Image (tube, rainbow, N blue to C red; front, side, top):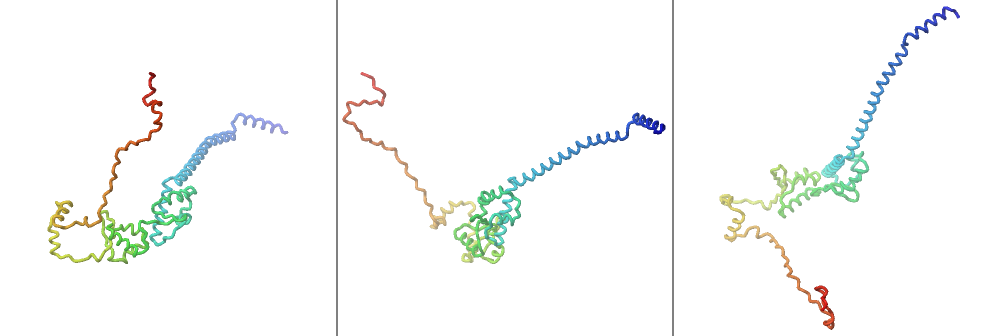
Length: 286
């Protein structure tokens, strides 16, 4: 080999040993930056996994919470009420109800709760052979049934019927009420709720104006019911209370007297001089 090349080679080695290599410096910086970034990546991964677990746990808690269960129950009851008001009074099984209410993602445990507890014990749900329907306060089929109900309440002195109860139990109630016309009287209570009364046209008569004036001229504000009743009796007029059914007073049972002492038949009379009495203890020896 050429001696000049050998000298240059030796000089290059010396310079290389005396000067730090750039490649080593890059490798060291890269490893350092990798070490610094690695905990950050791990931290992000752990936080991400933690967030994922929390979100999954949160989703699980929402689906199994009591609020979610009772929300599903309320949705089912409202749906059954709406379809009953629209005339769909036939019963449905649980799968059909869940399909029509779009509650297809509930668990088997919640389905079991609906079948064994929630729907069975709900006062607004009627259960028949594993199928469910809406149960209103008054189950009315048509306007004739409504008129019979109001007439019955009027005859028995029960007053009117809430419009909310009629709308709940009578399919297409607005159309039926409109068709009855003046056979029904509406009265609005102080709480803004409307009451339906039967309009008995047989009780409609004209009262003489002179009698109305005499009726309104009698002051009764300072007189209670007992004084009015007493005044009517003095005038030989019986009150409405006496014409109604009389109350049956409860029959008080007689108290039994003290229990009589029972006389027991004595036996062993022929041994009267032989037997000794130990009721007061053992007799002392004489």
